[in-house]
Amino acid sequence: MKIDHSNNFDLIRIFAASQVVIMHAGSSALPSGVSYVLSQFPGVPIFFIVSGFLVTWSYLYSRGGVWAYFTRRALRIFPALWVNVGIILALLFICRSIAPELSARNFALWIAATFTAGSDIYGTYLAGPIVNPAGFYPKFPSGVLWTIPEELGFYVLLPLIVATIGKNRKYSWIVLLAWFAASFSILRYYQHLKIIGLSETSIAKVISINPLTDLWLFLLGSGCAIYWNSVRSIFENRFPLWLAIFLAVSVLETWLFGSQFFDIRNGSPISATAIVLMLIQAALLAAVVLSFAFTWKSLASVLRGNDFSYGIYLYHMPIAFTLIGLGLKDSHFYWGILVAGTLCAAVMSWYFIERPALRLKSRAADWFRVRESKA
Image (cartoon, rainbow, N blue to C red):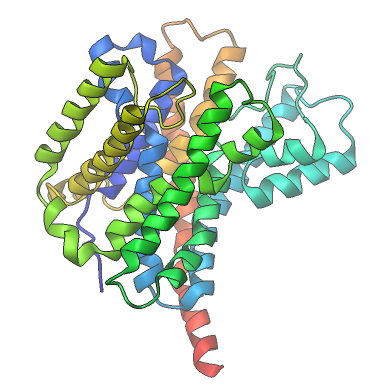
């Protein structure tokens, strides 16, 4: 089965990455109405939903088997990530922001852990901090890498989830619902820890960057991919309808609970009604995302198959940290330099790193397919 390649997923990912940039760099500069609307479409959950749909589709219908699948996922994540972390390390050395007491052994351990797990959080946990708080960069100049281990965890869990579903898709929704409930229960436990003031405990920190905590968002997209033939008519060419419903529920949630943004990790006391409403919002967000992907499909020609979202996501914070270190946070040039610099970095990342790596996908699939045929 083939997915319709005339879709708007690249545009959706650009929007999600841009939303993350705006929220990190300072949404207060925007008119309140615009800021409110943007806050209802959180970039990270959108990425997880899109990933759930596309990665599940790739796993179910691409050739080469499970090892080709893992190779494709590694080619998409690691090359650009390693270059990004390498550039950040170079900036830390150039700006003398490396911790003076850092040993060569701990630095090597930090690199091994960070490059394997995909996040500086794991490197710091195993080897200790590598950044000098008194340096130009007072902390590691990227706060977005926590999502990479979660994404990698989704990739590892997906074959297990599909295996538990089995070939009988008639009752697979029960298994999917069980995975969803287990993941959402972990999220609720994390919310509870935040509410009672234990967000800095070891268990809370582990849960905060655990793929099981946000797997339920991935499953919203994954479930739609599995049942696409049955549900596609619900989404195709129905974006205005789903958008209107989602915004209506968001306004209702704001009216009832005063929330100004859609926060899936809310750390304030929430009622059963608020929990149900959050689940409804998340499901509607998935509906908005998938309906836009398959509505006005001629928009896909705008990017011509180029996906700059990963580069935008990786590079906006190092650039923002650099501008802040230079004292330009409140200057008139801040936003212009941030946007232009991020776009330039993202374009170079795509053309020189990500796209060449992705071209190796078909070769990997052919290699594993030949190996399977000989076995």
